[in-house]
Image 1 (cartoon, one colour):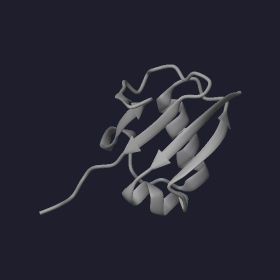
Image 2 (tube, rainbow, N blue to C red):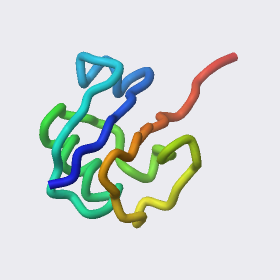
Image 3 (cartoon, rainbow, N blue to C red):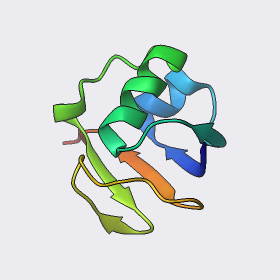
Image 4 (cartoon, rainbow, N blue to C red):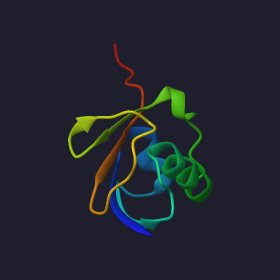
Length: 80
């Protein structure tokens, strides 16, 4: 199991009921982690609608997770 810190914004924060959490996961990639979290929190946004950053750097969804990573899922921004 890999322990990571997650940060959520906007719609994801509302659906998770928190702005951040620490989890232990068996997911190996960011894509797998998001699928796990979709099942846990009922996230409605598909992975292709999001950007993801790890340790303050935008990342590819196939990046492998490492112990202690901080992962931020970034939903689309609406505004006017």
